Amino acid sequence: MKLVGVIPTKETSTIEVEAASYQEGLAALEAKIPEGYQLLSIRTEKG
Image 1 (cartoon, rainbow, N blue to C red):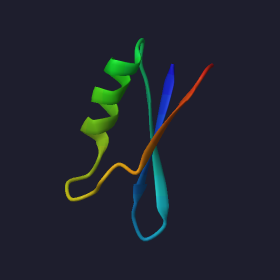
Image 2: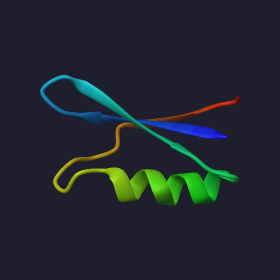
Image 3: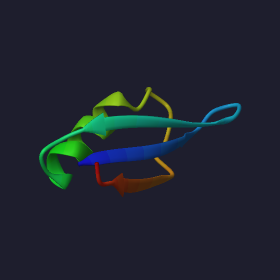
Image 4: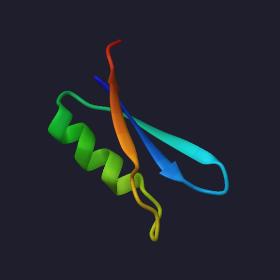
């Protein structure tokens, strides 16, 4: 399962992670968010 998160920068940016479950993916996604940034949305992609 792929999770894609959207964070605000000067332009909207996305960060992506691959994980076996949503919970694992969410933890990995949150770990990749730069300090001072906020996650705006999350979507999953099957693949």
